[in-house]
Amino acid sequence: MNLDIDAGNKRTKKQKIVIDAPAKRRKRGASLDVKKARAGWLFVLPFVLGFVLIYVPIIFDSIRFSFNEMRLVIGGGYQLNFVGFKNYSDALFVDASFVTTLLAGIRQLVLDIPSIVIFSLFVAIILNQKIAGRAAFRAIFFIPVILTTGLIASIDSSNILSSYMDSSTGIDNGTGQASTAAEIVSALDIRDLFSGMAVGTEIVEYVVGLVNNIFNIVNRCGVQMLIFLSGLQSISPAIYESCSIDGASGWETFWKITLPMVSPMILVNTIYTIIDSFTSSNNSVMSYISNVTERSGGDVLASAMYWMYFLIVILIIAIVAGILSAVVFYQRKD
Image 1 (cartoon, rainbow, N blue to C red):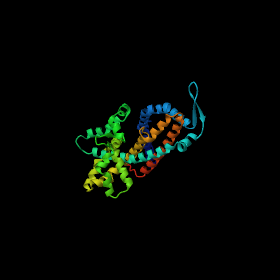
Image 2 (cartoon, helix red, strand yellow; image 1 turned 90 degrees about the vertical axis):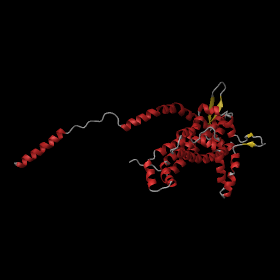
Image 3 (tube, rainbow, N blue to C red; image 1 turned 180 degrees about the vertical axis):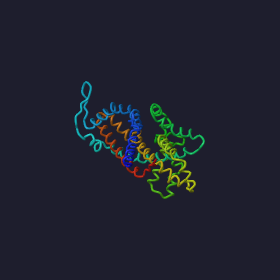
Image 4 (tube, helix red, strand yellow; image 1 turned 60 degrees about the vertical axis):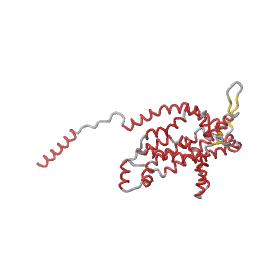
């Protein structure tokens, strides 16, 4: 009898627990991640609409032109005749200057890109130190980015000083010889300095080219410098304090802490620099293809050249991204 009473009491307690338990309420509204995703799409919506409505038709026409021959129609308009890969074949085997210009342009840009990334990292490390007026120095290094875009760039194209810097002949300095930027190298005897070190001729030519091209390198490192600065400022000061307590030198701290922590920014800046350099209207390949467009019937040939150049740039980006991704260090937040 007592067993039956105990069993009944247990069932009553269980029933009370079930009855007293609050019912689960369904969450109303979207989660935080969904809201962030919607906000992101809202911000990129103008670009997506512009890309679909404006750029996609242009890209489609460019591909279509590269496989056709264009003939002007009397009274206005044009007619396209499909010729397959003839334009691509003419660009590679008939046009004698395209391949030469392409190889020379790629070689020059491949040499410039590491110098821009390294120089921007060096400047970012200096400007990240606690020095007086560092905000002003950051603005000074970013000013060339503003000066080389939009209306200011078109005004600067007629600048006499800019023309002098880009000129290979220079101006008469009264000595009977032309003064050019290349004379900086001979004045500092860089060639003699490196010849005394018994290094390769290629290294000498590379360093000499960097010295002569320092004006262009400084102009093109503003955005990369800001990206590196954001990466350097995201490193916790506690990490550097731990290294200092353990007796690590500044050189060791740079290679063991700073460089691995900013390696994702190195990947981003390298890809950005490749795209910015290869698509600039000032490089030799883009200028040559632009001149081909101005020829009679050169639109279709230029379209084929542009698409070959585009595929080469994509291939270079894929190779560089694959190599750098293998050594990039990502800090875990958990």
